[in-house]
Image 1 (cartoon, rainbow, N blue to C red):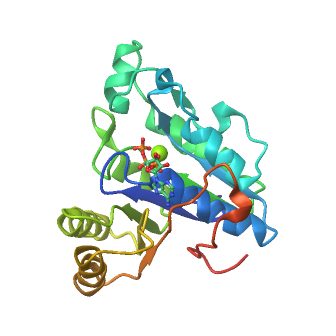
Image 2: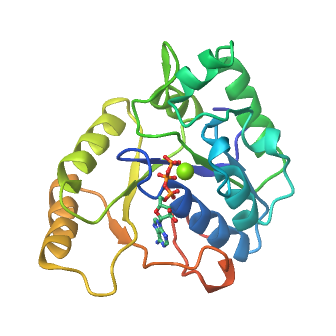
Length: 223
Ligand SMILES: Nc1ncnc2c1ncn2[C@@H]1O[C@H](COP(=O)(O)OP(=O)(O)OP(=O)(O)O)[C@@H](O)[C@H]1O
Ligand SMILES: [Mg+2]
């Protein structure tokens, strides 16, 4: 999309697979290189659950001063797919508003790190999927995935879906990657790299409260 800085779109093989952690570490890496990093998440659901919401962790990692609404224009209490959470609130997510909000988030920043919602084919509105937003933004895609059993199929399906719409699959990040990976986990990493034709990176278990202790995760050429 015209008017966006360099950036990445972090999707995942599903919900709760580490998208926020991966996006946060990428944002932190870029910020530690001295760039002004903006973060964006089209919709956040599950605010009722009382844990640090994704937009807050992303903001903290990026060292950004964006408001909640600037990072995540749609925010809902129930832990539901965004199209359902919006319907429960009596509204519908507007794709045009999301594109405009992403452009506004990136304005003046050196890099924009976007996190999707759930997996790549999750609906934001009844006929506008996370995939469609990724296409509209045109950013290279990073896929967050779990290291364990079941991940090969989910990851390869996601990579195929990313490439089917002409987007670049920049890398896969397996998280949290155990200090002592099992045979299955090691094999998953090798198999995804071979069949997925993308670099497969890993993130160790992190102390999410301490961004200063995180390793760098290079998803973009340094700013
Ligand atoms: N490297 C890691 N170190 C520590 N915790 C991790 C790591 N990777 C994933 N987790 C944990 O796994 C859980 C899911 O991660 P995360 O919230 O990033 O997933 P998500 O895909 O963004 O979920 P959602 O679909 O809700 O946005 C969290 O509790 C997170 O803290
Ligand atoms: Mg998340």
